Image 1 (cartoon, rainbow, N blue to C red):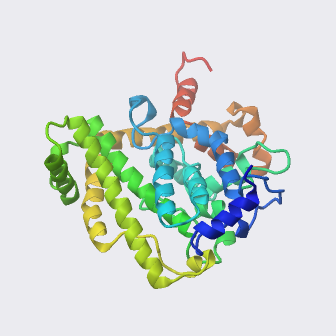
Image 2: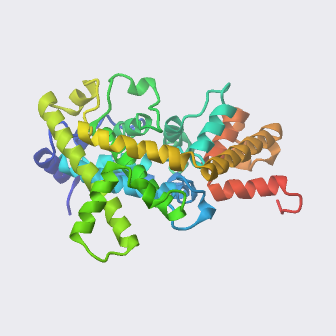
Image 3: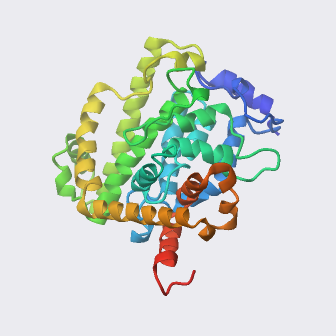
Amino acid sequence: MARQEDTRQAQDIFLSPYASMSAQSKGRVYQEQEHPYRSCYQRDRDRIVHSAAFRRLEYKTQVFVNHEGDYYRTRLTHTIEVAQIARTIASALRLNSDLTEAIALAHDLGHTPFGHSGEEALNELMSKSGGFNHNLHGLRVVDYLEERYPDFPGLNLTWEVREGIIRHSTAFDIAARVKEFSKYPSASLETQVVDIADEIAYDNHDLDDGLTSGLIKESDLSSLTIWRDIDRNILRRYSGLSAKKRRYLIIRSLINLQVTDLIRKTQENLSRLKPKTSDDVRRINKKIVTFGANMLKLRKPLRLFLMDRLYHHYRVVRMSTKAKRFIHELFGVYVNNYKQLPLDVQGKIPKDGIKRAVCDYIAAMTDRYALDEYKKLFTPYEAV
């Protein structure tokens, strides 16, 4: 049986010196005896997978609300895709793929029902009571709200995984500032890998879902150089492909092209900057895990296209506006009469306050649960 000591020795041999070694972890808030044959990051990954917050991602919106169809990505399938892409990148760069996977699996635990519109609604409602940021809430989930262990609150994850949650940043995600993680200007390479893997995953699967839904048309994408060039290469290699297979190959090639470019450019950055340890990485006040200039140029029109044609499509805007209205009304009903809340939520009010307790309760909801609650509270003939 492989022992944890064997894992540590293997990391010393196979991982880069600037990777996050499990033997050098900054530890947990509550001291625990480590597992005999799982590293601390493997143990964190398993705790995340078995958490209630992780399971609820199955019925939380990515772009399309859950009831609109079974094919579309949810927060859970998105998270799995991010973890797969991130592990691939981490392995190629000889980083700690266990830590990378744990951060990837946890990066969306703080998300609300109905995607970013749910987060915006809660932030508006909590504007005078500390606000709402899904990275901060993700940390709150793993540090406090998950109730699974007798010896400590939350999941008691390692400092490095918690850093990855709080410092997660993309075009849609703003890294939150928390004193515990403010010593260094940058995050670990594993965190940076998850940030970019998240962007690669949602850009490409949102394209796929947008095409499937009919909200965007493939003919519209021919104006994008990156899509057009890949399409031409596929048509040269294969004849008689069905439209479905050809689209799958384009999406797959888009991901591979971006991942390959990212690995190449990041290796160049590392060779130039020469960090010796993971803390050296954190002291460098710039992103090390980056695309090359040409890939950034190719990706920009694609991302603008998604913003204009998909995220701002009138049907998506209607759906988002309706979702915000649901959350505003649910919040108001609960705050005005807390006796309508489940008993376990009522029990948190003395410590957390009524608004934060209600905020935590709504943030944990799946799309389906939020819609069911709305019907129970606002439809006269619905059973409560």
